Image 1 (cartoon, rainbow, N blue to C red):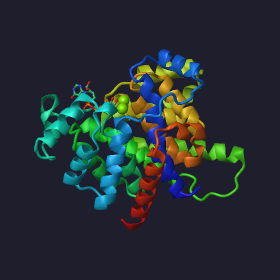
Image 2 (image 1 turned 45 degrees about the vertical axis):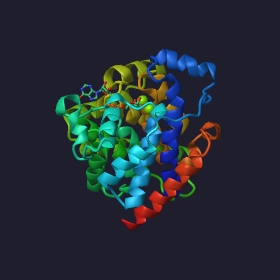
Image 3 (image 1 turned 30 degrees about the vertical axis):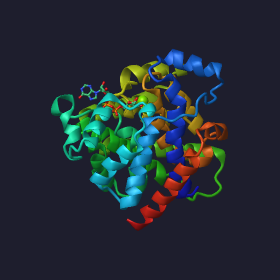
Image 4 (image 1 turned 30 degrees about the horizontal axis):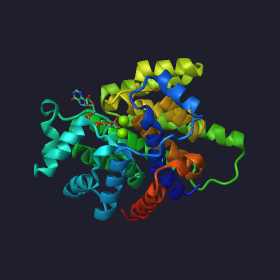
Length: 325
Ligand code: R7I
Ligand code: MG
Ligand code: MG
């Protein structure tokens, strides 16, 4: 598989996860599952939400500026802002301040009692950073923090974003340009790579809450329970809410425990809660790991018009830029 296919897979994975999760955002797991079982896991609305819109903004700004530029990125978020995409309340407030002329260096620190938001709105849009800096973990962390800080100043939001970006980066390194292996060999290699990914993520994490949740993922992966028990434990031990620490580890787990793109998205949505965002983040990592061709055609074809072509173009531009920097 080529690296370019992985770049495309990651960005398309975000949009597919987001659009599939959106109609059931806020449902409990059982209701979300029932809804989609009724629809045979077809995409009922191809409309994407803030998760994809902000991912597009991050990619556009990184490409235009050949890296991070805070003033440009803040303006890009404003240019792209479409209220009907359903932004989180904290992010809406920060964007309003930015539109009124508050500096991009200050706005995000003015909410949630001065500490800033720990919502998952930074992690949900971070895939382009993981792609662009997939070869350099410390640069990736630095840029993920800066891209987050425009709207999310809280340490735990920034760490969640850096972790998700790093998961995307690690997924890019797997299986590139590999030739002819049997299905069994491939399965075994994927399993070993995923165990290594989890170890790398654990070493990369700095905050106790993320380290603990990544350790729990390891235990959950070993538990080998049936689907229902796995879902229950994922929700109670990792979370399915809007806080970064209650959704980033959950997305990483949804990817790690599954065997292909589709399975990981179905699992993520079946947990309920912040389904568009958990599925968007799962889709970023799964899409990078398994590549564009692993995404079910019918899901891509059901996305709203123009977005597949546009994300493909952004992925290609990021790929070219990644060779330059
Ligand atoms: O993080 P954010 O952009 O929201 C993203 C979510 C995703 O599910 C999208 O799909 C969209 O639906 O919105 O928006 P924020 O408002 O910054 O954070 C999300 C939520 O996390 C907040 O509304 C709060 O409920 C919670 N939260 C906090 N609660 C208490 N104290 C975030 N930070 C804090 C905090 O510091
Ligand atoms: Mg959303
Ligand atoms: Mg959401």
